[in-house]
Length: 125
Image: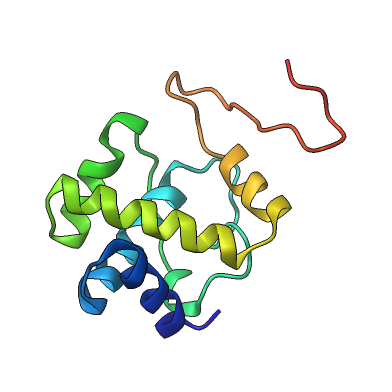
């Protein structure tokens, strides 16, 4: 998906103006990438728009996710939450179910451990 189409989708879902939707999208992806483990690439799926795949940095805890997104995008935490929800909904439609599950499974749980989401052929604990 091209970045302008991605931003348009985030903007429609969130009600944010396109410029703000773009800033929040970048902030959400950067924060997600920072939280991922064992990630050799900045793009967890290989399918993100080029404008979203050049982010990297150290990890962060789940508790400060929206704060970090808001800080990066220059918005309050409520706007960051609305934007983040729209970004995740758009990502969910942009990548396959397997790619989305893999991305989410690579995010640390609240206690810092990895909480994998089992695939269709794997048993849940």
